[in-house]
Amino acid sequence: MFIYTPRGIMMDENRKKVLNRLRRIEGQIRGLERMIEQETPCADVLTQLYAATAAMKKTGVFIIQANMRRCIKEAAGDPDKNIDDFQNALTRFIGMS
Image (tube, rainbow, N blue to C red; front, side):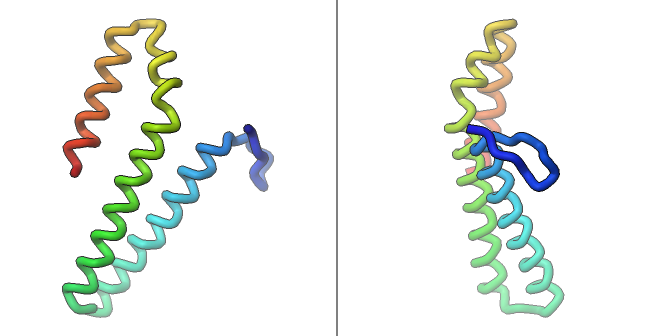
C-alpha cells in the first residue's frame, strides 16, 4: 500500500514505519546528548542508551522481516552475489547483539 507524504512523495507503508522508528531513535539520541551535558547519573544514561540500542535492533529486525522476500527476488540477476551480500549484512546485524 502506498501513501503520500506532505511533499507528495509516494512511500510504502513499511518505509514510513521505518522512518518513524528512526525519528524516534533520533530523539532518544538527542535526549542522551542532553543527559550527558546535564551530567545525569550514569545509571540513568545507561538505561536510556540500552533503550536506544534496543530500538535500533528492533528496527533492524523489522527491516529484515519486511524486505527479505524483496531482497531474495532481487537476487535473480546474480543470485550468488546478492545472496552472499544479504547473508553478510545479516551476519553483521546479528553480530551487533
